[in-house]
Length: 106
Image (tube, rainbow, N blue to C red; front, side, top):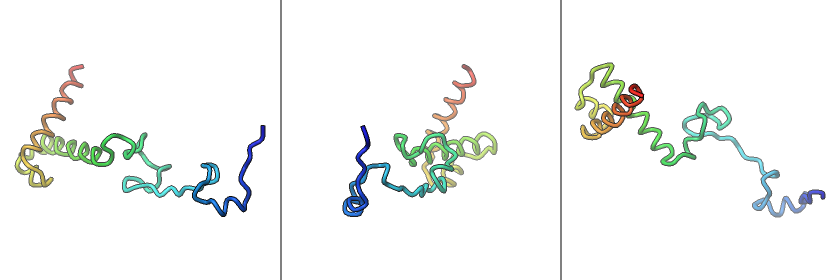
């Protein structure tokens, strides 16, 4: 059985309806990496639930915990630095510190 590929004439007329093997995609990357093929992350951030927003929040929370534990910054100071409420800082500390304690105990 041979594959029936479209002719050059058909390709030019129906460019919007090409099979994947005839399409050429540009690897434009995203704001986290210059190209998808050189991305440092094992899985695309945009393919995960919550996407970029969830990743940014996780990174922010890690930085809050780092500055709180290692640099001794106050909750109010962290809230002003990150432009969030003191309650949000407390929530980030609570979630992250509890996870850290669990992983150390296991």
